[in-house]
Amino acid sequence: YAGKTGNQLLAERLRKMKVSDYKARPVVIREASSVYDAITTLFLEDVGTLYVVNEEGLLAGVVSRKDLLRAALGGKRLEDLPVGVIMTRMPNIITVTPEDSLYDAAKKLIDYEVDSLPVVVEVKEKGPRALEVVGRITKTTITRAFVELGQTDR
Ligand code: ADP
Image 1: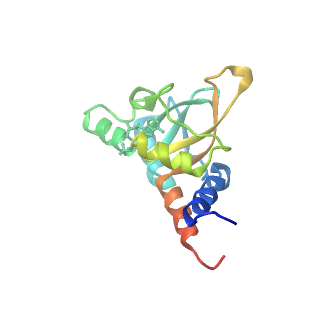
Image 2 (image 1 turned 90 degrees about the vertical axis):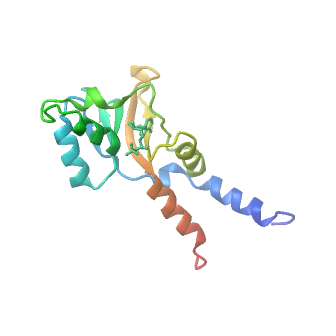
């Protein structure tokens, strides 16, 4: 540890924390699912954001609590309104990969002002925009890691 400041040590430790070690299970729905079903899933799965996939199971978009609230105020029949219509759509989705550091994920959450990032891997055969969802990183993930960093008994 010769010559390293406390800050350098902490920064090193932070950058060694990988998305793959902290990611949670993604909660996914189909693009054709109704807003009604999306709201039900949000409650049943106890999450704030759902990832939306197309018929091939590839990432198509993201739907957040506020997206669903806005849709609910829209006055349309929620059973007949597909989430594909109200979601934030690819290619405007901010993602991370399993190899990224948790620090980079936290920075994206702050920089882009979102609560959740899909963890994705490229499906190379299907092109550069073909992403499979393998996890999720949320503000809760980061808070849990922060608490872990503060523990002195390890
Ligand atoms: P909420 O809308 O419940 O406050 P967010 O702050 O995460 O939740 O979402 C804000 C907006 O950004 C929503 O319209 C949502 O669809 C979109 N969004 C959420 N996560 C992402 C993401 N990872 N990439 C791009 N857009 C996102």
